[in-house]
Structure formats: C-alpha cells, structure tokens
Image (tube, rainbow, N blue to C red; front, side, top):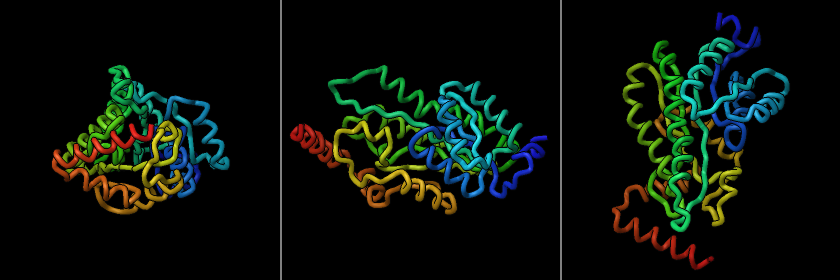
Length: 267
C-alpha cells in the first residue's frame, strides 16, 4: 500500500527524504534543493504555516509535503514517521537538522537556557533517531544525517549551551555509527560553520568565514554524493576548528582567553 501511494504516480527517481527543521535557514533552502533534484521531501517543524508555504513554493510539484511535528515529543515523532511512510513510502534518507541558539555570557548564565537548547539540539536528535532507526534497521538500509556544528569541536566563549549541545550530537553520532553500519544503515554528521541565518543574526561579533545559506546547501548537496562520515564547511574554518580540537588545554585556553579579552575590549 505504501509503495502504491508514494507520490500517487508521480515519478520519484531519488526517493523519500524526511527533513526535520525545514521552516527556516539551511533546512528550508535544502528542502527546495532536494525537491528540485527529484526527492520527495517530507518536511517537519513546529510551524505548520511555514511548512505549507514552503510546500507551495515548490512549483506545485507535490515534491514537498508538510508533516508538522515537535522534536521534543518522542512519541509524536514515531507516529509522524509512520504517517510519512504510509503516505509517501519508505524513508530512504533522514536529515535531522533542527537547531536552536542563544548567545550566553557568564553574566547571563541560566540553567533554563541550557535545558531549552539541549532539549532541541541534542534530545531532539535522540527523539528523531528513535523514530527513524527502527524502520531503517528492519529494512536493512537507509541514510541518516544529523546536523551538529563546528562549534561542537571545542567549548567556545559565550556559547556554552550551544557548543555543549552540538558536542553531544557529535559524540552521539560517533557512538552509534559502527552499530548502525552493521545493520546496513549509514549515519553521518553535517558540521557547518557560520552560516547567515536567523540564528546567527543574534551574534554581535564578527563571524569568521561567514557564508550565505545557498553556499551551505551547495556543500551539503555535494557531500551527499560523497563518502565519509562528516560533511563540514566552509573548508578554511573547518581546518581551523579541527586544529583547535588537537591543541593541548594550556594553549587552547590561552587562545580563548584572548578571544574574551578582545571581545571585552571592543565593547
């Protein structure tokens, strides 16, 4: 029945992708690009209106279909995946791209902000995995990509909630990848740097190697066709952050202290 209802006769040479966090920023632009490439895209976020507007923008092709949901609702996400597969067919690829961000300095230290960011950025990924892994494992095939961040490589000043949540996502993917590979399911990371989106518009500092959303989507689309565990961009910033990851604590903390002093000097 699922295969019969998939796109209701529309050619679908690429497959079905479930894209979470599709209402704004990278997710929105990626949904349009995937649809243009031939994917049937099931888009999820909490905003039904934004998802329906996105679906309408896809030239009436029906290749983007709205499935609103909340990543903090684990049971709801499981039901959502069941609905997607009943209506569109088996999900071939899932991209868990949701994210929240709020800069936080020491003077604004707030446990509530940590809970909010972790609930969406980390536990939201956990809930998405819990929903999509079982059917993929049962079929013995499928691709899952989770969006973390280059900021998850090391703790950065004034980004403690965000950096910690993205570090958790990176560790989660590293832990699960070998077991999923044995089951025939691919798990990969997407690690962006600074991308001009509503989230990064909150920053009050000059962001190094800031790129436009379209450039980020270009990097992701190219990465989908390549092998490897990680899709990271922009390349110069990724190299810098990977180098920081290797530094001993003494040198790394000296550098980040200089960052804090420089920022205070500007203010």
